[in-house]
Length: 126
Image (cartoon, rainbow, N blue to C red):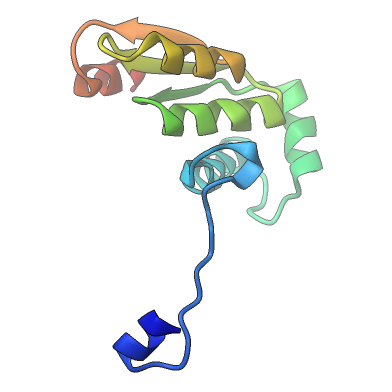
């Protein structure tokens, strides 16, 4: 109420996006949207295809997912790969903490450590 009063409005609402799909980050929102759109386009499916249809198509023609990440985005892409039943390879910079790499692997991703920075990992993932 105090924040709303300070702003001169009736109410302020807060939506907690910190635990979607059991992940401690909002990154799954963009990763799921981007992955789904890229996959349905590659498979020539309609954008309104349901998840079961996409998974079925991917079972016949698996499309691997690749991403560069320093943590949460890669974990979200890996989770999408797990949900869709496709392989995932996450390219990471060499200075990434081993605990973060472990979390990516626990999501089922192959972690590819690239010499250099995040930008170098991004170049390799392309």
